[in-house]
Image 1 (tube, one colour):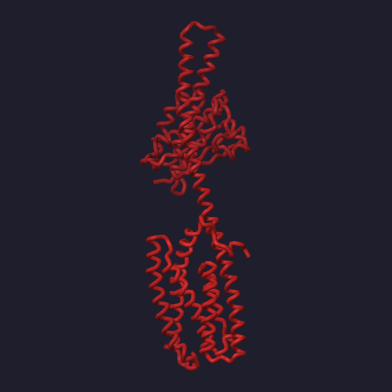
Image 2: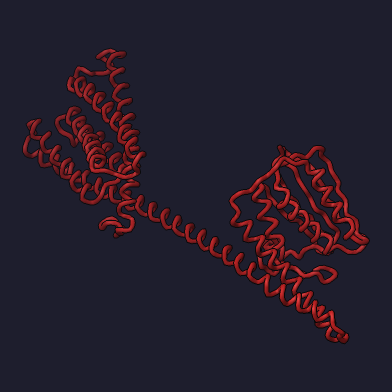
Length: 441
């Protein structure tokens, strides 16, 4: 048996655990009371609809009275459970009255099982099914602390003894019946503590997961804030270095110094690009407001392609649309960054004279954007990490263009903020296809 069955939970979780299982217990009382009520109503209907010769009700006259009592008491418990659940939902915490109410209902069910066994025969050993069912239901459905379980067992044993005395049971039979009851209550204790352990472990695991998720969220927020702060503060010294290099160029300098200054300016440009990517990544992770507008992608994509045309050189860039109109909701600024990044990469890794196609299509109420090139392709080992930040998937372009390792990570963030998906298919030496799927309006 797990040690947690024999000791209390840590004080850190004690109050919240009790509040949690009290709410669960109240729901179980509501469910059990309505089931017990329906069961007794069905029994009453059987009395009314079928003849005595079939039901043999004349052999059990006590059932007639107890059936009405069970109907009334279970209905009362059902109404009280509704009141208790409403109070619990308002405060989300347990009270002594709630605990006493749950305890009383558990004892009530045990008494019903006992009494039914006594009615069936004066010797409960021959008809313990109802008593056994009551014990099993209580041990499985309700969570009780160790002391509550012991009190419930003692109370049940006292009730059982009083019923034996009331039925004028023979002393020998009383001993046998007490032995049967003790065995049943021992099983009840084991099952009850087992389910207490199971439910307590589940509760602790859920809380630990929540705490870990909260730590991860806080760590992510801190990382983004730190990333944004550092990137922002790096701009000024980089700008100062670039300005100094430009001032030095104004004087008469030799070829070697000019080469060094060009290297400084190139490094500054690359550093600025990295900073911009870092800031964009931090903004995407921290942004709470994301405004989208209804847009026809035919117009939107064509405008982007038109801006890229002067930079394509001998390469061809073309929009192929198979759906008009292609209406979606997008954030123009963010989504333009997505297309710019994907088109820029396609051109960067495409050979001279080849075609880059932006294909617009539709499938099952989804708009699909494909950026297809005939470039060098992506190695198979890099495909699984292509959308992750700061991985080894980044490569220089065919003309030596540098990669920051953040572009596709940002692309994925933005696409997912649009409730879309992005995937890639590629084969080395043949080309790549980046596929974005958005919900059609």
